[in-house]
Image (cartoon, rainbow, N blue to C red; front, side):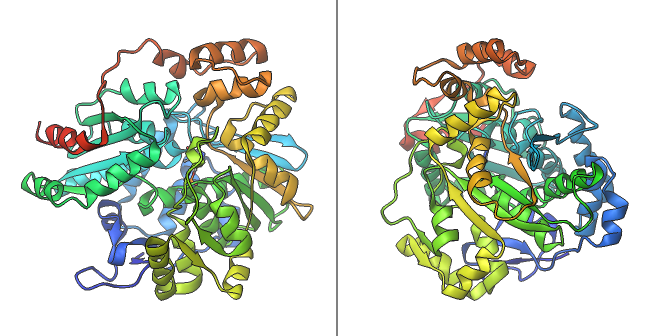
Length: 492
Ligand SMILES: *Cc1c(COP(=O)(O)O)cnc(C)c1O
């Protein structure tokens, strides 16, 4: 299978590339993203042969359909990392919480967020390619708390790869911070910055356009790659769990073959939702993909009104920080799929230049044929956490935003799968505020222990262990000093 750019072709760039190329060089013509030229189909035969398989087996068969240029053996080894998850026979447990509502728990990997679903195998494949190429690669990541730990875990001690991770000091939970600063690996550098996530991300962006920085990389023969969801290697692995969720409903007799379902997704950069969109295009019977947002509701406005408008918007810090985002990168891939490269380039250039674009009426209708969207605030999120905790199901603040979509957007009498993107243990203070209905400032440790006792649930051992681990990375700097820190690390 070949990959092309969402913004058409620019001189000096390859017109069509293989999968391995997109992993190592994720940016392309006119600042666009790579997308597959065509998608494979999930036909009746595929469904009947695969609905009963384990996650790992299904994943291999889905990846094989894409006919990538990665050898089967490498794919198999990469997917065998799912054995590290809590239950190797049930990688993504599907839990029924209402007669028509099922939670697809995607957070049972090493860092307790759904980022592991893609980053575990992705890290193996990318490391394999870097090793084979004999070249050195640098991966830069800015994180609001979940991408960082998952990226560091997957690349620790991998050959020919160095990772630098920037996080906002004070902007993550204690658990998220500890997951990063206690992570061992000679090839990892973790830097806290004085500022918020936006500052971390813009520092990274200005670094990427700094010519002195680029010169230094070149002098040291280092190429740049990316591990965020602009990299298609992440997206391809995020199609699979949507298929698995549907197959699980089939297996349990909750739905009949061909019966449609809703899938609801707590969204930020839209990678998870894009995975569902591709699954739908491949033929998975999805009625609609429901996009749940928090108070940063740019996606709600886009899908309901056809306007992407961040001219007067400032990022709001919420209790679901992984969804605090203004520019949601993967929307671009949907625009391309629906409206083609020229129009995508026009819209994205408008967004970059004016912080704004508007879809035409027919374009909006087209978008609404696959998506519906709603947002909720922290008060609603906390009420939902409390409501379900009382019924015996504990969901994290990101997952809780989906309850609004269940209440408001489910127009037909169909089953719904809701993607759960993180374990509650990563956001314990917010969880305790929700359960106690207060606004006290709890420490993570205090909140973890209290919730564990009150709700009689276990704290995941790897999370508890964090509090006794040695801190290996204690660098916290002002924005101006980031480049210097990174260069020191690269040369060491
Ligand atoms: C990353 C993340 C999201 C947002 O996912 P996208 O694919 O970027 O839309 C939602 N919830 C949690 C817990 C996350 O870590």
